[in-house]
Amino acid sequence: MSADPGANAARPYIGGQAVIEGVMMRSPTGLAVAVRRPNGEIVVREGPVAGSSGAWRKWPLVRGVVTLVESMSLGYKALQFSADQQMVPASGTELADSRGEVAPVAGVAKADADAGSGGTRVMMLVSMLFAIGLFVALPQGLAAGLCRLLGWDLGVQDFAFHALTGGFKLLVLTGYMLFISRIEEIRRVFQYHGAEHKTIYAYEAGLPLTVENVKAQSALHPRCGTTFLIVVVVLSILIGSAVTPIVLPHAEGIFGQIQTLALRITLLVPTAAIGYELQRFSARHLSTGPLRFVNYPGFLFQKITTREPDAQQIEVAIAAMQSAVWREKVGVTATSDERTEVFGSLEGVLARFGAPQPAE
Image 1: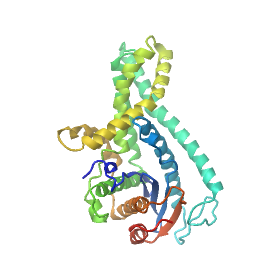
Image 2: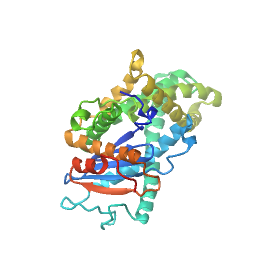
Image 3: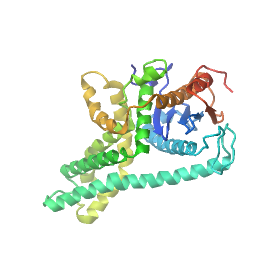
Image 4: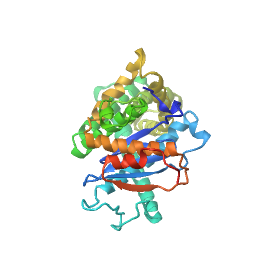
């Protein structure tokens, strides 16, 4: 099993994300989202990824930041699309747009797309502020509060303070994931997360994408976003303890905490960039052999964010994967239109996207 199919030109790299009752898969030049509607139909949105070419996008460190920003943007759009599909009347097969009118299956109106893009940016901003408050500001505040409560003389320049903050980050992250995993809708998203991982494993192994082959795979993957979060937490301890004494050698008190928080937020981008490279390296070279234990902390957290999927959920993940791979096989250009098509079963998806067809 190849840990990084991107190294094989015949098997392009595919990454994914779970959405509401569905899965998003991204190939080097395209993106596909497959969602199960309440009436059992599988709706697939497939199209090119704008700006997916360019040598600079492959530069180390730069590619991590670009990938993170694009993943957030595409992920929110995929989530919005998947949520919309749950509102489609069970008796119909037509795709309704946000105004309740029937839209062509080939796409949506430009005005709606522009409105959705603006809404996506707002939601991304709100989510980023929430994440910074919960996973950056709160852990630092808890660390500072504990030091004051116990009378520990730890300044923001001390490694121990950053280690304590990192410990609270892991505690908050674990508590948050355990809490949301008890919500039924989130639990189903975690099942689709497991289906996504299993399908990618089967694809990377070169196996036929059948429910049986996919079900037999592991739900824990070294390139998972959950593992990436753990890598970032560990890096934040090391980078913060190294940079803070240099940038803020005299910071102390409440004002010093505010300065340190601002520095932590500033360091999020380089920390994420380095974390991406480290995770990429470990997934490619440390997935097997005596050093594979370095992935175990991430796998432990993935046990919270992944659940064993059922056969219908695996079918949706296969539909997303097959649709994403189709674009790579047929060589559809980046100028091709995005399309949305509805299928009564996985067999219909496979008939449409299973075999290479002439580019349109």
